[in-house]
Length: 227
Length: 83
Image 1: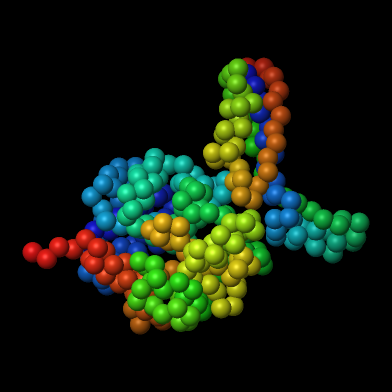
Image 2: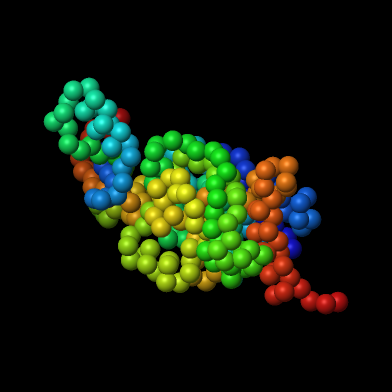
């Protein structure tokens, strides 16, 4: 399975993401600069965290308007998976690939620590190696992770099981304790906590590994052909 | 040449932690009459004359400058001398 990690000016979790899929999971992966990207040959796209364009205007807003996002949209329309983490999640929201928006954290502080998350949906292609209701630990590192959307969209998300991860102890004021959501088609996951920073015990948690494993195993089940 | 002044504010009812912090701080300085505060952005554009300027600026706001999920905007257009 071949991964593209899109690198924007200001991305800073791109190498962690690359390390996770390339070295920990042993997949093919490229760091792809946003300007010279041809994404046709990739099976999955990873939008890493950071501060693309210095968070100018709104977090993720400028990156969401860049040309590479047209290719990301084509990839999504083809049914292929996209994972956006932290700033990557913010970019997906700004691009309209996921519903809602991010407000500043309720306490106005940048927060960087491990959080307990409940797995709310274990039936997505990103989460089959978890169990519904299981509590996992991933680091958060954000100043604007306070998920907001209108009541109608929020009840849609709940009704369609699109809330994938929920904070056990809501750190930022997110509606419905949302830490991660998936689109209704099930191929675009956005989350504020960082699975790519939790792929080895040495890092304090390896719960993030199972997210990448789920994605890879489900891809193999769908596409791999026995030679 | 037109000058477009765009005001972008949090929607009614959307949490504005910065506005809240400003209000609390002003109250703390003895300005107890401040009951609420809201913060937003002001964007100034200088654009060539265009017959659909209102429509075009609306599109700029919808596509990039404001996020309709959490922000409202309004703008004024005025004639300015060429710089």
